Image (cartoon, rainbow, N blue to C red):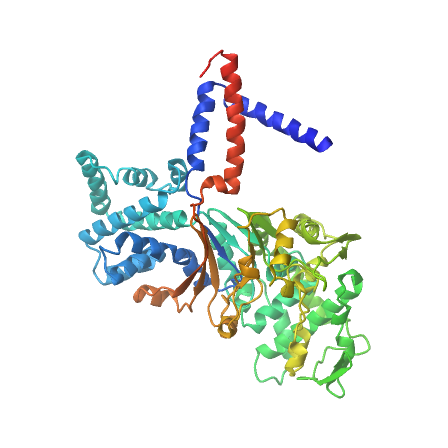
Amino acid sequence: MNHIYTDHKFEEKYFQLLKSQYPTIQDASTEIINLEAILSLPKGTEHFMSDIHGEFEAFYHIMNNCSGVIKEKVDLLYADQLNADDRQELCTLIYYPDEKLMMLKKEKKLHKDWYRITLIHLIELTTLLSSKYTRSKVRKALPKQFGYIIDELLHSRDSQDLNISSYQNHIIDTIIDISNADAFIKELVELIKHLAVDHLHIIGDIFDRGDRADGIIDLLMKYHSLDIQWGNHDVLWMGAAKGNQACIATVLYNNLRYHNHAILENGYGISLRKLITYANDLYACSENAIDPVIKTIAVIMFKLEGQLIMRNPDFQMQNRLLLEHLDLNHGTITINHQTYQLKDKHLLTVNISHPYESNYQEQEIIDNLVEAFQNSMRLQKHIQFLCQKGSVYKVYNGNLLYHGCIPFQEDGNFASIKLCHHRLQGKKYLDFIDSIVRHIIYDKNQSQYLDMMYFFWRGELSPFSGRVCKTFERFLINEEAAHCEPSNPYYHFFNYEKECNMILHEFNLFSPYSHIINGHLPIRVKNGETPLKANGKLIMIDGGFCKAYQKKTGIAGYTLIYNSHGLRMKAHGHFENRETACLENKDITSKSQIIETYQKRMTVKDSDNGKMMNDKVKQLKRLLSQYIAESHYTF
């Protein structure tokens, strides 16, 4: 009863607010007409990407071609007017306007007729893409420079009036005559890309492996509408930025192993000089300069991880306390009663009597790194952005989005996990973790929960990871059997509709058209694996965007397009480089797979925003009825 009473009070407050905003019959009527018109428009296009892992060039291209949406619209408009090469050149101009215009200028192709034809094509394409939005929304997307002119060209394009046609042609000629065509084209193609995708979803793991995660975040910070679901690599960097020592050591290990020290030193201004000097003094006889540094930071990482695990028994990670099992005299390690030969027994900084104790030099290095991570203004800005736009999961337009997993038990039920004196499962567990992450990021003092960021990064019961990470074994043991990483039962049960529906229902999603959009687990397409699980209820969109995984997956990543017609999966081929794309008008080869097609086209009314608009219309109609009754009007 109290809940109903509270809802009623809120509804009345909302009604009174509407009354103040729309004080007359005409005001209320106009807004009803406006909202009803918007509700009838096609639903905007959503674009899903996952597991980008610092691959800036491929990411930038996919963002520019909107997973092939741009090419589809160009082909739709000009299949009968332009040949395939000319259509592809137009696409390349849209993807890379600066580079393409410069090349065409060198080839002396930028004459007045080229500009006129190109501007007309771009205006026609913009008109097509803007047709699913209100004029008000399109105007908000217009660039400050040329915004008024673009608006005039868009809304006079289809006019049969000769005066209007002359007016438009004169605008185009003037743009060319005063040498403003290049600047105008650049603004117009950005608008085209903006209109092609209404909202972007990043399903986690922006960081690590590739070398330009910082550049990717810079691009995302300029994007018009997006959300991010944190991945395990993202929370690792978030923990490092807040000063978690184990997270910092792991970030260094991950990036040095992939030779990506530039993101640390050039991207975020974090000096590795002390670490490099110490490592090369320790292992002066090494054949190269990088191996000693990787070995040194790996040992520091294992020590800091061990200290953290011993401080936090609730994390249930005691099976990762492995330094104590080393036998450096014989060059072996015994794990679960199995003895393995070590790749390298010369671990000069491991004291077997106190294996998890950092020596003075190691502690000095890590203290300096903590200060560097915490004082990197660019890194802190990026982490604040991740927190602002991100979350553990997102429910959006009937779909459930998350990077890793919902931890399960072996019997197919949600795992009950004890954390911070709370026992939680399912949605409540994810909500609790979301609140903890935000507390850590926004807490200006040293958060009491900071250790948890490392658990979120690699704990078997973490929703970001969901597996036992065998970094230690991969680093020190050759036998592949020791590298096998047991996964949470979730990765078995996500193949079945019953369990996937159980997850969706946990998040109040009961529509037959609802899906789980998942990342984290690379799909080995070349081995016959499919991204569609549980008869299409779960869609796994990690297809190997990261170059390091492409040999395993056989493709270069999946993306997902969800528009008013349905859901389509795009499997992408390898991207060479930007120069080849511009010189040869070469696009990423993508194969499209239709997952779901709707018999009736989805409209704004079917979206989350549409539901809120529909509620507003109901209240406005109630308000209108009150105004009419008060004025003694009748229909």
